[in-house]
Length: 91
Image (cartoon, rainbow, N blue to C red; front, side, top):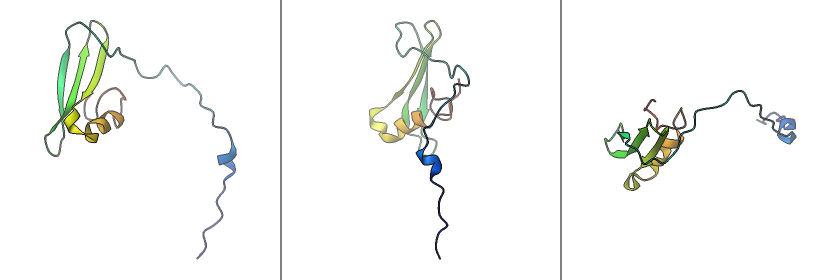
């Protein structure tokens, strides 16, 4: 059985992106003011993956993965629907 020919015409065209809004809020990643934090754990094994912290006074927030959590901790940042918080955490 042979595969049907694929239409590759779109692969030769330039891709153009249209800005549709301001995008998600941006936060500073450093502060010298007090912060609140949450410990983020792996829902299957309970291992600590890292910490989400935020400070209202400076509009600062960040995700700090634990080094010993390995790639799973970094994957939480990438897979976040908000882009700023690990998956499973909300703002």
